[in-house]
Length: 463
Image (cartoon, rainbow, N blue to C red; front, side, top):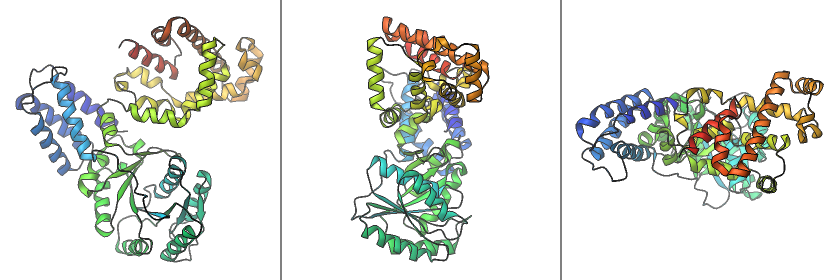
């Protein structure tokens, strides 16, 4: 996400390095470039003006810290102001209410509101151990009610049935009564969207709000609409007391204008980012981490959280013990690693969060193709247990059978086995010579996607 803004700012901020002191003259051109980068990212003009003025005021005449270059000092200021623009710190949901805590979801049609209801329900069930009930009060969009019912079932939360013949306010009232009777912690109410903000829509949602008295009223908005997202949220906020925003489709937004504009235009915090179509693709919004990503510094904290949440600790412990004892690394182990990486959103998602990943050579980035990992997994799944434990027995006829069973070519199977052989050798090097040796070994390992790991290994090994 934010690739265009990130690339532009990274290039611009390199130009300020090498100066002994930050003065108005030597930051003027840089500020102009930063301004252009923000405007191209579709950040609202008043936000850009305020941002540039704040950076300029803090930067001009600032003495360089002994441990920092002027460029680093300037980047620190830019990062700090990016955080200020987006809200400084994560604002979590306020669920400290007499159960059930009601969360009302609003937004325009096509913004991903119903999907966000399911994602939020899953987030609250899995990470906060809440008993969640969902309900749809959208009686206008064909199949909206059925869509939420299906999604609720998929994420393991309860769904309160409703019909298109019912009045939305009555649906909300009945769901609230049910949530109280059955001691639910949270009730999430999906409402109808429109193609634009209109009076009829506002009156209806005001009626639902009055009946429910929700602790959170969240506005779901599409990040790809840029500063229009902020303006729509503002119009909605004038009619309804919003408590926060869910910014969806962030994975498809290379600009970042909405994320940088919403807080200052509406005065409401972004609480979550929708970063993909899967039901677990919802992240709490941390302005400091997003600012760090925009400036190409990675997001290690989020990466660690992903690891802690996604990695099977029991399997990881077994792997570590196996490695210590010097047991062979098998294709079954390799497949397990691919599955764990897929759980974390794939290689590209991990790369985005690593510091310095933006500076990887373009040919290395192009090799990182998550589809390749799906192919690798399919090939290993087509092998017998005996073949996975002892790849040396996989000869001509076996390779043809595996290719046929996985829907791939024989050369794909050959390539995987060659890559696996390289990985085994690397693991042996790691046991005998430690991490630095392993990193050097990774450089030559695996053309294609895991070759990018080798590139990263070389990058970190030099530090």
